[in-house]
Image 1 (cartoon, rainbow over the protein chains, first blue to last red):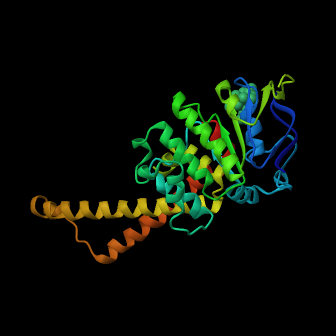
Image 2 (image 1 turned 180 degrees about the vertical axis):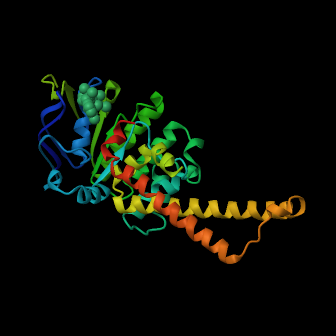
Image 3 (image 1 turned 30 degrees about the horizontal axis):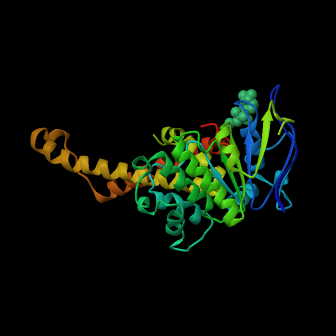
Length: 218
Length: 105
Ligand SMILES: Nc1ncnc2c1ncn2[C@@H]1O[C@H](COP(=O)(O)OP(=O)(O)O)[C@@H](O)[C@H]1O
Ligand SMILES: [Mg+2]
């Protein structure tokens, strides 16, 4: 079942048509790769799909709800419960330990399960890092903590922008495996945006983007 | 100082907005930071006064001061009020941090 749908999304910045009439649907349990060179509009598309950026036209449906029609405040609460984000540069808070970085998201959603953060870190293989600050962790470990954080509120959708971009190939591969596991084992709809063709054989579906549109050769 | 600290952490705030922290939550964070910073400032000032005044009394008695608890309380309240009011500036910056910036950092 399609849980995330973008309908002829367009976004312009001044004269630049960063994304130009793109439609996409992703189902629960599916890992999709959006592949394309720098500047092709991948990040802009992902931002719209994640309710971070309003399209110039048309709309984004998440589980049938039009997120583009919501107030920013409503969209914010919706993101908290529905979408997990993963970033190239991890975006962990440097003053907080791994556990606290995950706990923060649980607190935002008023989830009071005291073991949840630890369980997630354990599932992602970084429980032994729970009380470490980000600067004491490797890039691969930081990304695992970030994935734990993205899963904290059990969202149906994971969106990752260049998740392997700051990692060596081994840590990058592990990251992709964990994201694909989230789709296969936990039924998440996963979108990975990257220009790294090594990810191609790992995902269920590949969409190629160029100049803000889908490329015909898939 | 707070203004500087929020700009330094602009990407942290963008990330927090992106993952679903409400403006209210973030405003609370900024206000709390302001409260802590100004209280620490007061404690630091009081410590300095406590150290310097006996020295002044001894060497330059004309400049030494007499502290009363009323004066200290007034300064504390003043510091906290001004410090918290000053957080209005970072709050305005905060409002103009967009969640989509998170992918640009
Ligand atoms: N906030 C913005 N302001 C101006 N131009 C932007 C902005 N975001 C993206 N663009 C432009 O849109 C195009 C697509 O960018 P982006 O979505 O980041 O591509 P990708 O992620 O594939 O590298 C580029 O030409 C970029 O310069
Ligand atoms: Mg990009």
